[in-house]
Length: 294
Image (tube, rainbow, N blue to C red; front, side, top):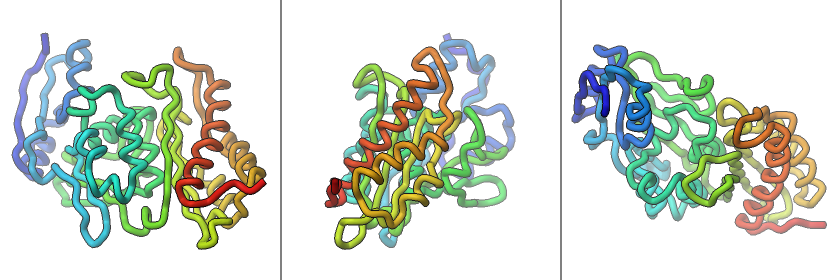
């Protein structure tokens, strides 16, 4: 059934890096929710697989100096149920709980969700709004990169020969006093890929009347996940009211660039971008203790 030429089980990060360096055509497998489907459909003939599932260094969620460290082998279920995540960044738990069904969430990993480079990845737009940094380890050591710079094009990410994702880092200043919300629009409530996903993370002024800072992210808003930086800059420091919400909804249309597919037209996705940004922002503001002034 599966046309596999070679499979290697790595036990350490350095072990995995060496195998990747020596085998240019190697495909990494962890949960297998993506790779096994490709194999079954004959898209990976004579596959060379590197199984990283048993690497202890890449498992777990930690709090180090108030920075949240998510290891890439953490499953969606583990993230959703983790106390650190629930207390400090519950919007990420909210986002990963929309992935597939329970079976997929039990085996699918956040590292795989990021590294497959797909714009519809439910965790990606949320991590964009959390200003996540990624630690990449390879034959030349480690390097850190902001998640927005990790995505290059469809199914193409910034992983060089011999490299793999080893940590997801969310710094204290990126989540402290921020409140967020993620919404996935799909035809079904479960077991469906997003037609569009929207994440908003905001920080209000002390008196809860102004939008001190806001981050707006989209999945399926373009060929890769994206942040609406221009819209965010326009909104910073503004008084919270319906006029501001409407302005933000219109402004995101200048930054998203969805396409027409069999799931939805470009025009419908643009409509979704405008409406979802407004609705998700309203919810984030309310979670932060603010309210919309007429």
